[in-house]
Length: 455
Image (cartoon, rainbow, N blue to C red; front, side):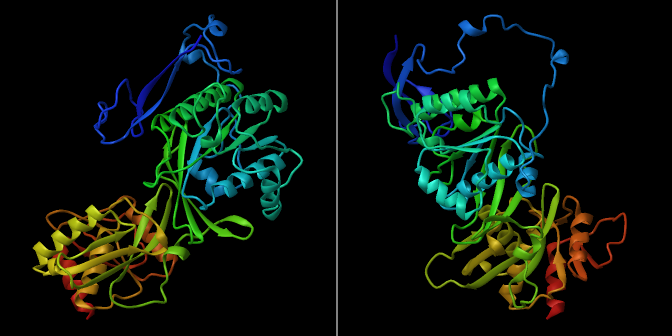
């Protein structure tokens, strides 16, 4: 017999409390507690692992545990396989989030088609579209194979029955917010439904070693809707980045139990679906343009290096407090760079609006673009055109010192491959000649002197 009541869950950390308060007692976030139905007792849904069915489980020596069939399933989309860690592992549960219309369902449909074409049966579950709607989209994307099954239902009982009957090799659920347990007296997408259905799906995936790809809706803040505990339960969490109206999309992993979280995948949205981008530098770099406020840096994402154009605009403020706008670069990093430039170079940037943008819509969290951003700001502030064949690499410290960045030689090799001739880098020893004209600087004042020479 089930005992029903109400409890409150924090949408940020997933903590549970019996009463509402303005501040979460666990993580301290404000206005994040949401009321939901609390149910205790045994569920009638088939497929949940119960204690009575697992009484013989005992601890065992970890070294004696076998690996089983640990062969990774490659999708044929190299960008996706690299981001997820080389392929999909049996029993793996992946959560994929992103803005509406950014390409989540398109990518999952393409992955299902490619895997099923390789002989592995795939089950695509849609709780938001009808059979005809999914069929029209799959025909447009040419994603129809004999080994691919379709189920348009959000009932967890229908999903579990289909898993028992079809025995698929991979499952895609679009979306987890549309899945519901009819035993719960709450609407699909609520915290109780999300928590209960995710647990059921995760247990079945681990029990039958079926990889499951879950598509998740996002909130206005860009995070997967629902309690944070869903992200803690799954093995991998991935997000699609980029503007909805921009044809280029970035797939980034924020959690991965079986691989690195530093890799990104680059895709281009076309009429035939998402296509891989083999040379990302062609997206983020346009060398045919020259003008003030343009500098080129190099970004390291996992095992990939690609060049990025940093655009900056400094102009006198017209209304009250000057604006500080950063697109792609951390706004706190921009504030630090402006403070370093103003103190060490005696520039009156405090009276100017400063805008910084990374071409192509990419977001960068590392410090390798510090020197390029500083050069672009100085170039715009002094209205000086920087040479188009020069790359800027380095991290700017609070005292104005220029520090080296990770894998600097690899970044210089990428610049050489794309035809750059000169590089401004920190003063450090290099193992081999990169084939570029090198300008070594130790302090931000030397960067300013270098830029003024170009004038």
